[in-house]
Image (cartoon, rainbow, N blue to C red; front, side, top):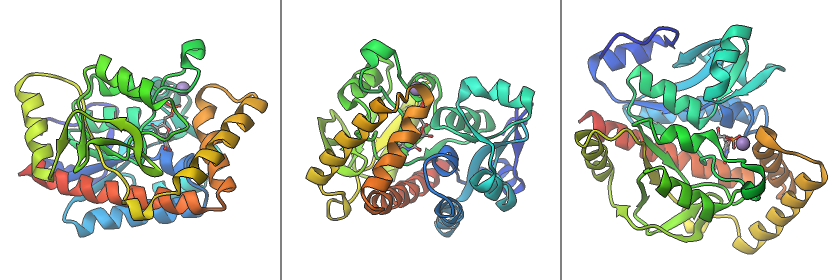
Length: 305
Ligand code: PSU
Ligand code: MN
């Protein structure tokens, strides 16, 4: 591996694994700092890392500590991002600001993918991707995840985007940005809490090995886009679709009433849905995430060959 880029600190396990060409899986931390309630967030952060280790892969949870981007947070650092009062949500545009101001931050999919790629990591798992927000034709609110993934060659496992977003528009933007999306054993784009968002996918893969072949093909062509692997939750474990639609409508109305906009939108809606479903959506969320971590670890092994 090339020397780690300046300005990024690698955890010891991660550095050793990358030097040895051993499989590493990158994990984001906004899902912990801003997506899940405390103390579940820390439990999930630690359990996910253990799940990755049990699969024979080195976990690298990314975050920003005192302004410094860290690839492979220590347990104490993970705890700090899960519990500290002042933890900002750090996307790529926030990295220089966090550094200059020495802030602590949970990294979004965009910032995590970008940093992980710079560190030499090839596979990452998350819960749900950011995307195009409803009403974006007026507000221009589209997650920086999309633009960043267009130029960051990593393989990313997610369960699609949450239905708080405009899923159709998100898929259109992914196409425009030349980002390949494949369903894992499905031709339907998953809707995070539900296995089928109602949108079709053109392509599917059947195995982690297929994902590795796809990443290699991208590399051989000299393309820089991420490869998105869309991994649906088990239908038996999904949120009831009718219940899901009802809560979603309420959450969107509440956000509008409260005048929530910009980067506060995602955390607000997710928190609303969590409370309005009495924790049921949280259980599905965690199930989805476990599934994505498991598949990401498998793909990390396949990619490391
Ligand atoms: N979607 C989720 N859960 C999350 C996020 C997205 O289902 O926690 C987080 C991810 O870190 C993602 C970010 O990268 O929110 C997107 O935020 P924005 O729309 O402000 O770019
Ligand atoms: Mn936004």
